[in-house]
Structures are given as C-alpha cells and as structure tokens.
Image 1: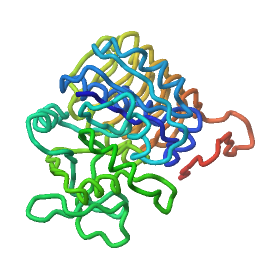
Image 2: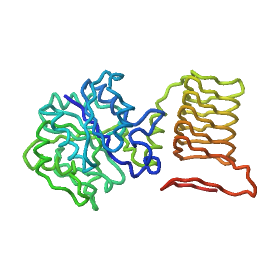
Image 3: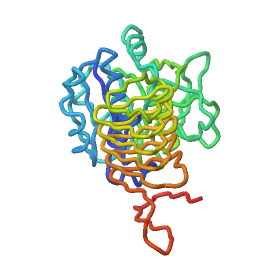
Length: 354
C-alpha cells in the first residue's frame, strides 16, 4: 500500500502568511503541519509516499527531503495547477499504478492516527473508505449522506446540507478510483472534485465504506482552526526542559523549553512550547502558545498564539492573544514622538488595536 499526500494548494485562507510560505509548513506546536501527516502514514506501516507539489514545491522538497528521517521513500509528483483533489489523484496514477493507497491532505490533523483504519481497509473488501466527522458548519465541506450505515450520496459544499457529516481529509482507495475520476466533469469552480469521483464509484456499483472519526480532527486552512489545532496538540505535551530557566522564572503545567532557549525573569503557563535559542525575558507566556526557534519576547505578554521563527515582540503594554505572527516579524513599541501607531503590513494582514 502506498501513501499520497497533497501539498500543492495555495493556502489563500492563511494569507498573508502563505504569500511567502507553503501552508503545509506552517507549524503546529513547533512542527510543520505536513509532518504530522507523514508521521501518521509512516506509523501505519506504509513506506512509500508520493507528495503532490505545486508552486511551493522547492520549499516542500527542502523541508521533507527524501523521507529517510521517517524510514520512508518519498517521490515528488508535480501537479500542473490546483485543479481539484480528483485531478491530483489522476496526476499520481503512474506513481500509484495498481496498488491501494491512502490519500492524506497535507494541512489536516487527526488525533488518533490512521493505523487501524489502514488495517481495516487492507483486510476488508471495500473499494474505498472515507473518514467522516460531525461538524457544526457542513456547508463548508464535502458532506456525506448515509443510508443504513452505507454511503449513499456525497455533495461538495451544499447550500442546504442533508447531514452534518463532513469528509475528513483522509481517503483510502483501490485502483477503481482512477476510472471514476476520469468519468467526472469539472465543477462550477473548474475543479475535479473528489466528492464527485467517490459518488461515481458508488454509481458504478463499487463499495464505499464510511468511518466516523471519534477523536478530534482539524483542517488547518484557517487561522482559527490553526490555533485550535495548536491548542489540541499542545494539550498532549509532556514537560521537557532542555534550555535554561533562571531561578526568578516560573513554569506551570506542561511546558517544553528546547535546547538553547533562555527563560529570564518570566512566567510560562502551559501547555506551551518555547523553541530552540529563543529568549523570553521579563515576559508572560500564556497557555496554548507555541514560539518557534530564535525568537525574542521581551517585556511582553502573549497567549493562545503561534509565533514563527526569528520573530521579536518587545515592550508591548497589552496582552497579545489569538494571533499568528510570521517569520522575522517585529512587534515593538516605537520610541518616536509624537506617540502614534506605525505599521508595515503585507497584503491581507489583520491588526486589532485596543
């Protein structure tokens, strides 16, 4: 069995961050989202993974390499344009050939992994297995309708959903999916939808089994979902102090301080993670905060946020919360008079001022 990870999207919902970085490499608990999917597939016993790449292929290839760190062989498959998930499947046909495969969207996170699901699919007789989750906003997802426990109908982002069961970003297929995907037509948004391809499998008489996810699952394509995924992963941390914490600092609950990090006269309330060579001085780091490597937090407060590498936050009087701060960003109090706000912001930035 092979793995197929989709990592070619543009990440429009996470702009401006994704103007300069692949959305699958935005970190959750200081680890790129994409790596969680790779680890889940490796943990399920699969050793050959194809990664669909697009405009950000060089960045993805540099981050992942040949896959050897996970004991995998990684093959990169270039998609000409983001023309839909079913189009990505067809793009990978020559790589997959006749083998069954698991397709994993590179910006998704599933708490309990996929080992048992892969085993069920390999030992069963279905042509496809789809993962479903109850969601409060099904109109934003592909939605499944079940009849007597079997998949009856799939609709992509319906205006009036007939169920609250959304397609989770993990699918399992055998080779029949290729014929199904070749039979469908582009949707109104000019994409070959995976929901249409799976529906075509059903129309052709093939078996599609549903599995309802009991633990949490997150599509990290939006800021709120990214922060929520960060919160969920951090909540499973175990204490690990590898950097320096001075006697005047306090660490509460589950906190990770990585090598070379320094915590000086500061309070950190976990679950939180402080990256390698980051300095936290005279500051407060609140729960559910991830700060990547080589950052500086001085005389400031931040919680429920993600701070990317080499960012600095200095002398901010009010607490920062629910924020995603990009690489090399500087947030500071300006010494220039008269007192005024001064911004250098990219396209689609969001700033909240109190």
